[in-house]
Length: 460
Ligand code: GLC
Image (cartoon, protein in one colour):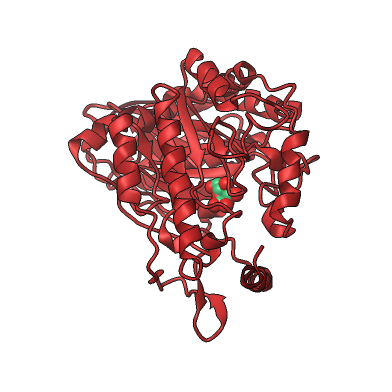
């Protein structure tokens, strides 16, 4: 590394202490034309997907940010490729696990911020082909997921820590341009070599992510305030890159972590569940275990109850859930995690009618829980286990009948300006589901606010 690059790296290291890993909200809108609505229809019905963070970072097992967090020199880190032996990588098993969990799509990290590509890029030396694996793992993944009848997603990070130009795009312009060339080339390869791909899930693209939301080189080095946008000369030329992508893959869906128009918005982490949004397609991504997206030995697994609440919370807010696992370096998904996913699948086998192909609402999230609907049925997801009687605002529709989908019995009546619901029987279910059958389509009803006493957590 040249001397000035080395001092720049030192300054970057200093920045570590201020914590620079927050994602940047880039855009709050999605493409809203008819073509976009029709290509995303399957995804809106699907609701639930499997995220897979897997790469050479799985070997040290300290999370996918290990290179950056521990400031491992690029050449040192590159040696991990020689230790990458995914002997138990069985993408058919991955696809079967996703299917059994009731998931309808999968998204694999084809290349994360460390720059290691799981696919064959002849122009890069840091790929699975040139690692001890000597395989194009993306090709095998695609074949298996397609065979299982699931939709295929690629996660891809334009950001690459091996390039000083990522941190200092204006200081190292030529290097930043090289990084961009890699991005455009690899995106083109991913779009050209694997047949039809359904989702391109970007992360770390868009200029506001440069140097992790803005190291500015004026009055010293500091993080750019959240409301200030990158104002330097570099651009990822996302319109060009995504224009080419859409030409090669006309029905592909993209998220909002680039500077180009997106099909859906991405919310990240349990704490980012946020509000109901029935206008823009959106997805919450989060982890099945705590601590990192990539493999961590002995990571704590969320309870079945937690996962159900995340799924129901997202769907009731009219979003999707993309739930992550970090397979072991040998490619195997940790058996205890597989077991939890199987339990989620069992729950969905029983209750999937209140999830798949529904839309969130018309009752907005509140103390009672959340609601979903399809055709003339509203599904109330009662998430407050202690609640026996519920009083919700009246519906501008006639209720023909009501039934409990989760055992016990339920009585419902419209009185004056409210709907009164009485639940009997077991109250320990994480989500008691009541189906209200109406005389007219529930989609005709505008969103209805419900009481919120401040415990929005319950509605998750
Ligand atoms: C973040 C992190 C990353 C993870 C991703 C998932 O932006 O950089 O490690 O892949 O979010 O949403």
